Length: 279
Image 1 (cartoon, one colour):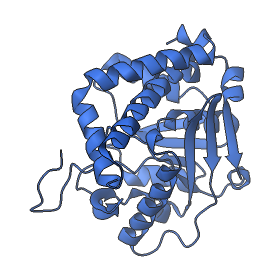
Image 2 (tube, one colour):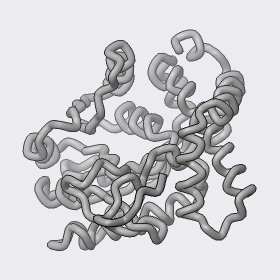
Image 3 (cartoon, rainbow, N blue to C red):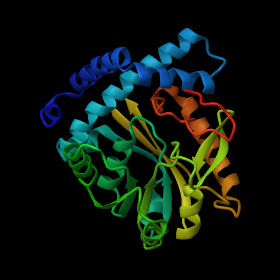
Image 4 (cartoon, rainbow, N blue to C red):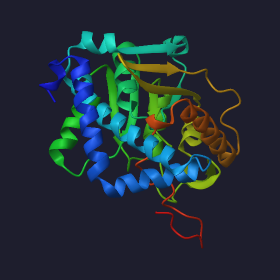
C-alpha cells in the first residue's frame, strides 16, 4: 500500500478495477449477499440489471480499498487535492456538538480523512477491531493520521463517547448496518424490516448534539465529501421514529448512486421473531 500511494490515481483505480472483478468472480458468498440485498431493495430491477449493479459495486469496493494507500500513506498535499468537501462546514467552526451520520458508502474512509485533515475540531468515531492484529494496527494508524482524533472500540460505553460529544468532539457515526438486536429497532429499509441501531438518536440526545449527514462518493479525481444541512427537530422523544427518519434519509442518498453503497453486508441477517432468514 505504501508503494501504491506513490502511483498516479488512474493506475491505482485500474488495479482496483481488476481487484474488484476478481473478487466478484471468487468471493461467491459475498456476491450472493449483494445480489440478495439488491433483489430485496430494488425489486423492480431485472435480474441482469441487479447483477450489473453488483459487479459495479465490487469494482468500486476494490478501488476504494486500494485508495486507502494514498489516503493513509500519500503526501498530505495529495489527499487535499483529491478530496473535495462540499456543502456548509461553517457550523463545524463553532463549539456546537454534532453527530455526523456517515453511511457505509465505499468512500467512508475518504470522508473521515478529509474532515480530520481539514477541520480544526476534535473528532471521535467507533470502530470494530480487526481479527488480524497487524491489519488492526494498520487501520488504526490510518484513521489516526490527521487531526485531534480518538477511536472508541465498539464495546465501549455510550457515556464516555457522549461526554466527548458534549465537550466539543464531532462524532463520525456509522449506524446503518445490522449490529444485532441489542439497542436496535425493526425499521423499514427499502420496505424490508431491518434491525437498525438507534444510536444516532441516542448519541444526539445524550450528547445534546445536532445530527448532520456527510456522504463520501467516489469520483474520477478522488472523492466528493458532501456536508448536509443540520437536521431540524432531531432527536425527538421517540427513538424509533428518529431511526425511521434516518433510514428514509439513507434511502434517498443511496438512490443517487446505488453501486457505491455497501451491499456485501448482510443488512437483513437479524429477522423479526418467527420470520425465516433471507440469506
